[in-house]
Length: 445
Image (cartoon, rainbow, N blue to C red):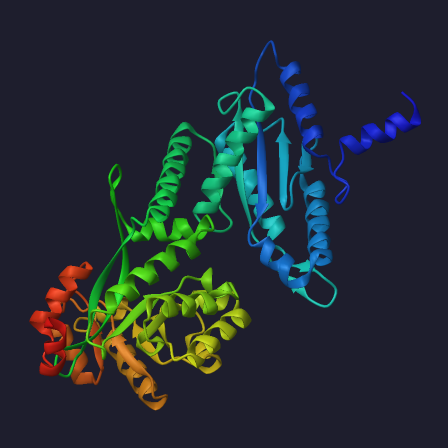
């Protein structure tokens, strides 16, 4: 082989950025181990590590900083893999391992924990440090596959499960996990089809004034009853839509449906609608929301958008601009699940909110736990000083409602006042529970 051919061979098997091997090098290594063990197929393991939230870091600091982080990752991995093992870089922020001497689950998980720890140390970008976590998936030969492509596919399935479970997770492939991921993929496809066919419904839960139990508005809640899957909890399908990148399409369809339904309500009732963390990272969210309201003919002053602290923290600058644009158009902003996130008081200082929603975790214990009662008192006093309205969520019974009213809480929401109901049932609820004669006349007209 000539010098030129050697160089071409090296290029074909090397990742140019990190200097690690690439997929071709990995395939070669797996084939070599498989051939060596053909007569006695002893297990070995391959793994995939993927950096969590690398894309936002890359977008924020630029591709040169992103490349620097990837090179530092490669350096760390090269330094810590055992003798005889191989580390390669594949697409983007994905790295892979071939581990000839790891034979079973416990050893794979232990190796994964070591890699996770190594990759969690700060990355030096000169003028700043950045921290990242990594998710990992492992596949063991021959149980998870008998060639490189099968093993990689199994490791990717395990990695996908790790990503679904949150940051910094480790999963070793098994048939049970494969079935679980297959169901998740089927669910994702069914959800995409349901969004396309406009089959996701909106239900509405009343929000009342605690002083007189008068309805003042409704929160819109997504509901999905699939012909094959049956009822699917929004706690399952909403995070799935966020994770797989189509929460915008879902949210836009739901806001349109909710606003159209709310046109039939008395005009002094507001519509409360939840924005996801992904939407608060998208600069186009404010124009999208206002465009939907314009097409439907719904007054922006009647809309309240609920956001969580976690969502705000994901991309504070973008969230700040979105909130400012929406408030300028008359939309009101509520901080949801108050008291359960991080830096709540800091968020109240940095952002302009119109309303706070006290999380049900405190409300449910208001009559049995003095600490919860004092926390609610403190929140109410603070909100009074900041001229913020307050809604207590998750009110289940009369005693909780009375206690909150006594403490000076303005509004409440929960099963005690009404369960979520579809648009027709909500109109019926208004006929039975809305007391303004002039408005009642308009409703029945």
